[in-house]
Length: 532
Image 1 (cartoon, rainbow, N blue to C red):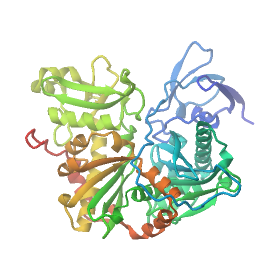
Image 2: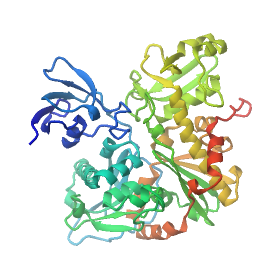
Image 3: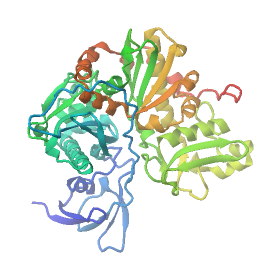
């Protein structure tokens, strides 16, 4: 038997016994503490830093995923992400209140709850089962982030280690959110009778422990697509003993029930005008069309817009640079969530930063960041903002905070992400035989889309410049769709038809995708003030 050592977690006020030779990250998970590990525990991202001490006075900062346990330790997670800005609001589409159950015998009060399981975050909503009124919301980080930032990392973990760990932690997270909703509303969780979940196809397969092989390897198809209805208790989710959970249908291997939720919240299939819907998260899902035809695709946008793979990247939390402007007369100005000293950069701040550096001429069309000497030739004040990291130029937000900067590699990560999305838009248009001008509305779903500046997105080529005035943020449209499915049984049943009605375009299978993607890696020419 391996020797056991006591680990005491100061912030969480808890202790566990951990086996010798196990990692600190494994011990944290065992204690129910899930730190970010975008690299999946390979030790390359440096996001799982914690402080450890044997005696409470000599502290060392270590990577939790790389630290083997061979002694008793005090562990301080104070620098792990906290107070995240998780989007729960959305623009509700009004539907008649006609739920899948009309009443509960002998009950004056009964409730329903909707869940959006994102790769990064989980949002939950409590609804009155008699009126459909939304009573309260709750949210948390997805604890699966401790197993990798993106769905591929988590799918590979499941293939190697099995479903149980990731399935158990998501079931537990949903159960905890139900408890939080019940406490906030002052109700008993046993009075909740129906749940509706949405999430991407990987989250869906992990939740139900469906086989993952066909999802991460050719033909990249889901093992199960249709509408699911099961007893909640079978997943250790505690509501009424006979309470049920619904999971909306998925559309394709990387177009999941979250996209179905977005479609249900917007119903482009009922509209004359052609619209484009984008849900930009760790993956990028796009839906284009109208009542005549809808086509969708998924792009490997990567987790850059959620802070992963960015040197100073972080989620939308206190201390994150969330917006930035540039004026030739006054220079660069940025804002920080919580109005604190900057600690890192979140997705909306990242897009603004690169757009501002393009406007200032500090990044050229190829994505090359100018060095200090080149920057000073443009404007002597620029020299104060330029530094070096890993022998390459880097942009410093404020010389007073030298630990927060943008690297050349960060710019390349954004180019990969925006190139994939821009190529997806062009190829969807080609598939339908339309151009940018035919698109009347661009609906941006999700937290990143809610906070990003559309002009910055257009200036870097994430969105076509001609669509800059047609952008409409719609908040958490996926969660909105889950609520609509609870509120109206006809809408719920419609998802089964939509599952087969929406065409899926497999971008990687298109011979022109690679050339289109490479073309879209470059930044567009900055439009003049007159054109603005």
